[in-house]
Length: 355
Image (cartoon, rainbow, N blue to C red; front, side, top):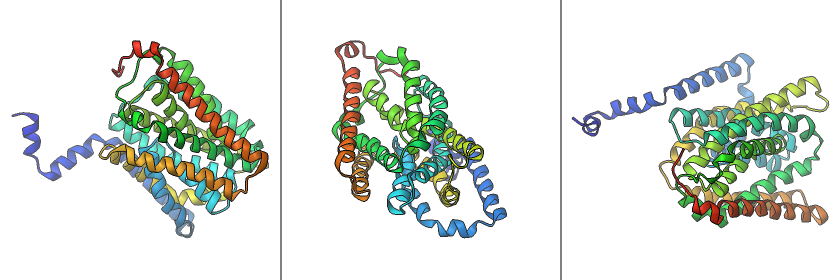
């Protein structure tokens, strides 16, 4: 009897058990996390903190879905909610983004690895090495010395650029299959550069390295979204852990310079149990539905939050011009990557098989 026939002979409960067995490591991770979270809350007497911070948990129910189903970390939602709605400093939004992604994006990554989703391993490995250099460097020597307004504007610029790029190229990006081989010989230098630059950006805003490696994959490598999004999720997970650990360690050495606001922990307590399951759920759902509607909505929100930032912070004059110019420069870089990925030399040597 064939495997298909055997499958039809199984009950719904038996098929569910088989499916769960395939992701048992992910389920073990979830059990360990929720047990640890419960012990922290109960033994520390933090129930009131969790309840009083329900708005961020609600916001991150959407943010965690975005984190698992798109190349954007949960901080993409957490940052503007805390900074633009609750008027908290950009440094708090950054640290919260890194902290909550250290659960949500890690959870999604464990699911991705356990479910054996395709990844661009060489670019990911090089990106992790670069992030291991760039993220602590940025946390120590860059992020603390950037004015709060510029932290907010950098976040807005990065994601507005991402949104515009998607709206312009979405049809082509969604239609891509496999990955071209032409640039694979440069995986390590490209990945290292992405990791260092992206790590510095993430040390300032809490996100960004995911967008950079994703843009590199879809524009330069012409990679399938089924490869690009999981790879970006895993790199953002790694960077988030490195980033929050670096910030906490620095705050213990020089709290006057590298302070981590106690509200980061309070918001993390409320949001962590939501994102632990929300981000992996996003990774599952996106395999069942078309990616285009989700990416269209998210791209529009990216542009909207940039406009909102300009209005909320009353940006004008030279600062306004610099912010607009920065968006144009970012999209210029995206266009260069796209042109390199679609050059005649690449087209003549294109091979869409995954290596």
